[in-house]
Image (tube, rainbow, N blue to C red; front, top):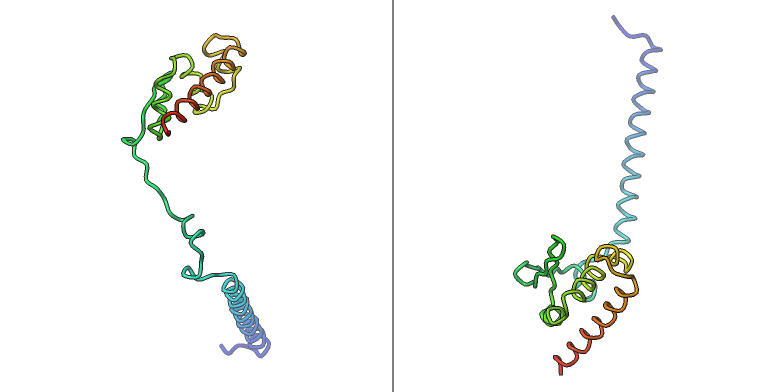
Length: 140
């Protein structure tokens, strides 16, 4: 059965619309590529500062000094800092590790160790002063 002229016209119109949509999509895609290429920079044209941001340094657990506190293992990378922490009293070491490595507040530490908040603050500040003095003396 031969299609009617009306049906042929509809098919031709549909064919034209499909081709037009595909052509418009192709143009949009090339415009998009053009916009992206204007913002791209060649890797060889980037500065050393930017390239250095892409680098990474491997850290191995063997490089860390491990302190165990309340069932948690806290790794300290600096040998000098770990030596200073080892020279602190047990209470001051716990307070400093909880505050700086476990992000606990003085109030939370006081509740955990069953101390006054002011006592925790005093031990923390005196411990930091000791660490600072120890590290300054060691680097001289």
